[in-house]
Length: 348
Image (tube, rainbow, N blue to C red; front, side):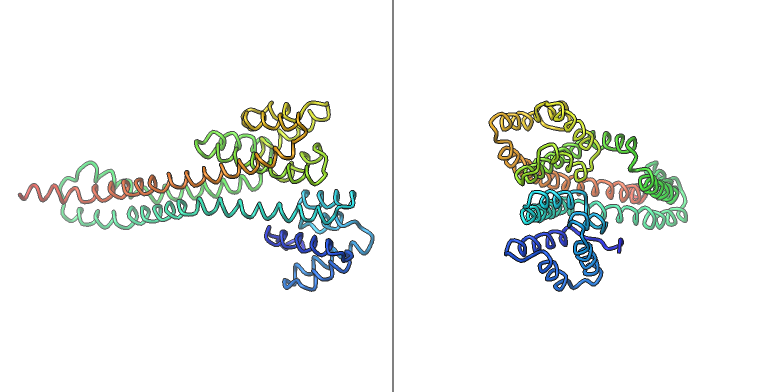
């Protein structure tokens, strides 16, 4: 059953319902049976039955979740902490809240970039159609007419003739890139180079940094306020925020905390990843014993700023894409109709 895909929505529902049942006073076995009986997906229901049998057989819940292969290290790591501290219901509630916020953030991002992507895809389709279909039609007409064509028209016809080769080359390059990242994308050297390139792209780099910082603060707040030690909380983040520079920073921060360094001081060693304002505020929270409150505020503020930046980027891209598409279409049309304008002037 390793092929069953547990989406975030399903995990949020699973952890929320299990937490509610346990908080109501039901024992684990009865709660899990109720969840299993209410599941309509036969394959997921089979996974739940397998987990239940594993727990009844003597394994801890976190071990059963890990063995099922459908849960992340964060999932069974938090459940393990809940079982060890006797706060399983609270840990399950934490996971439900985490996936709820993750779903909301994903919808926010998709809503902000969906329209520009649709415009871009439409523009590409229109331009490809014009270059592959419209330009050759004009070329046939001008070939029958004879005579010299303007330089702009000749260049456009030559580009149209070479365009299939360009498309083939781009398709091969895209396919090769997909294969490369599929088989070598998890190598640290590849992730390091890819991350460095992404962070240097205007707008995109800032959005990535803000998104990672918002997730970092929100998740660390949820873990920290749930009773998970700070060092262990940051270790759990390594399996959640997978962007290479931040994963490397988590390892360095954990090492600094083991040596007795302050949390904010460890973050301050990565000025390109963590804003100076964030580090300063976390330092204040650490010194005043209000780190959890400061993490919550910064997580919320960074999320709002990320949403604002995404909307602004979308609002900026929409007119730029429309103008760019209009300019390209105008270039193609002018280059094709230019001989007719010249012919009309000659006749006049």
